[in-house]
Length: 228
Length: 115
Image (tube, rainbow over all chains, first blue to last red):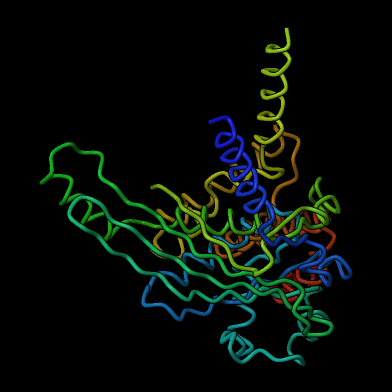
């Protein structure tokens, strides 16, 4: 009997070790150019919306400054930069090219620009509960070289439940919430948590240059769950 | 005794994990979204008040005002035709964040309020 217990413990230890040995990388290994060039000033470009969510673009445009600012970067004010891009006919991020990026460096001092693509913004509900799925892809490009310094894709699930014990009230509440709710706080939370996890600290953050050896998933993809 | 040390270590670890953000944004981003979305006087006034709250709280907390918020306030003042006050806030942005120099100078030239 003792033999079997030892065997079971050995198998459990091996399973634990296998789980711990999941492939991992460090921030510096995954984003070496981010550590070499240390961009300080970031310009957020108008988000690109590939999803069916009509409001998603505005949610992203208004929340990304805070999410990136909290990581220690100087983020050029979106209201001003979007206005200038609109006037210069550069509001369509899809049309950005290396020559324009160099101009953004020269005229506004931007070291890097942030491309964000909303790939999925899907709301669904089932009787008493609803959910919002957001998949977003981010890429930070150097304005000097047009090289990608950092990129990450995050999938976020926001659960939207009703507090009511009455099933009819809960069903109605969930349906209304899913349809007309202001999802800005969820979008801000999703983007802030994405940057908190995936983006190295910028030079103004007290943690700058301390995260290079921290482990991170090597495939540049992650998932998050948020409760409304 | 050992248990006490263990508990203390866990509490210290938790305290380290729960560090407050290094900047204070308050509700300014959400208010900005609502002002952009609704485009009415009430939402813009609420956004302006949320920026003023950030300025006050940041000073109280000894933190810098987050990037861009002085400049956003200056743009709101420009819409109110208050150019003198707007210049003060464009300059505050420059003093707080050296990276903003080029854009702030560009904006002040654009509004013809540079000194």
